[in-house]
Image (cartoon, rainbow, N blue to C red; front, side, top):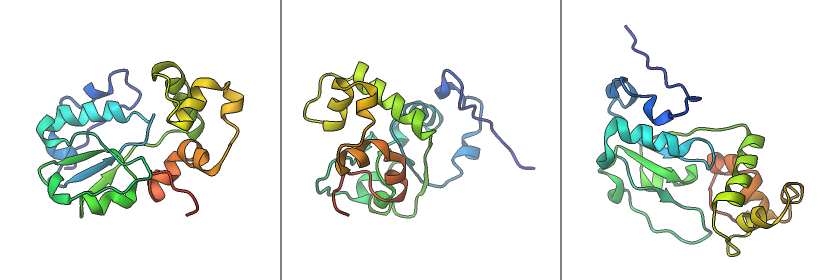
Length: 173
């Protein structure tokens, strides 16, 4: 018969949700990329995956979020069962060809509000990061008003950009 393993997303300690689930059911020999969209339980998923497969089979956090040129090689990630990080799907073949990818999405309004309050209350002052600094210095109503294309892509439409193209902020594409 078919085995199933419920992973209750709305559990306070999501990283404990997979305990007792057969790893072979969750990771059946396939290799994966976990495209972590910010503020969508990705850190909890990191701990869940790490607990299930072991820390040596999960890549260090990989982040491609600046508009710079990155040199990546799939060889650097061959040893990992799961590559994890803030990356757009356009990078999947560059860092892990033929891997399956997974992600978590969240209600867009809830995600933006969570991001705003996280940046406002938990991140040191960051004038060098325009959308982070906007959350730290502007009231919510003002923060939510789009200012320019870079701000819009980097804040209000992250899930779409990350799943459809590239997480890096790019102007005029």
